[in-house]
Every structure is written in C-alpha cells, then in structure tokens.
Image (cartoon, rainbow, N blue to C red; front, side):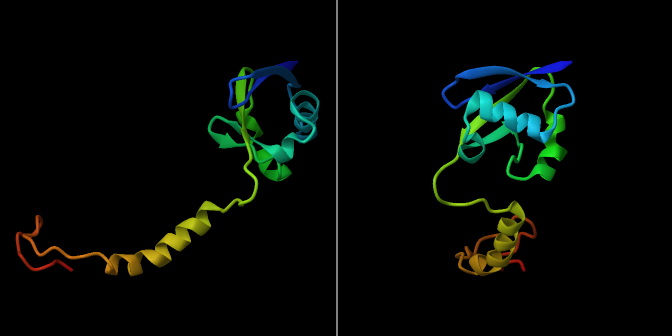
Length: 123
C-alpha cells in the first residue's frame, strides 16, 4: 500500500507524490530529493499539522512521522540565510531571568487598587 502526500510551497504550487505505507526516514528523504529539490533538506522546513518534521534529526523525525497520513499536506517553508534555531526552553529561561529586572523599570501609578480599594500600591 501507499499513502498520497502533497507538498505545497509558499506560492501555492503543489507536488503530489506517494510514500510507502510504512515509510522510513530514508524513504521520505528520497522523495524530497527526487520530487522537491536535491538540496531540499537544507533549503526548506517541512511542516505537517503545524509541526516541524525535523529532517535534520532522524530520531525527532521518527517521533513525528505519525503526522504524515494518507492525504496529508506538507508545507515547504523556505529557510532564511543566517540566524539560527533557538529552543523555546532557552527563550523561556531568558524571559524568566530578565522579567524581574524589567518589571522594576515600570512606572507605578498611584491610584485606587481595583482589588483592595486602597490607594497604596499592593505588594
């Protein structure tokens, strides 16, 4: 058996192709190289069901390949030159570290508190 998959790029061009029913990482890469672009892994991010398929990491791809079913559309998002990929956990840690310092920079408005109805700032 095979599953039908559509690859759609940013301008709406769609490439219809098929994968074996129990496809492997190598099968997927072969389809990308043969049907999309020989340098497709480096030039595009592959997104299915709002999730990056992570072609740069075989183990991550294997965890996410269940998102590719018969009739799935995989969106090709062109990578930008430069920059890099930052884990969301790293960004969250930066925000948590910087937030207390930034909150101190906010101006305080002395007005009636909507919770306790006092004019002193609540702690």
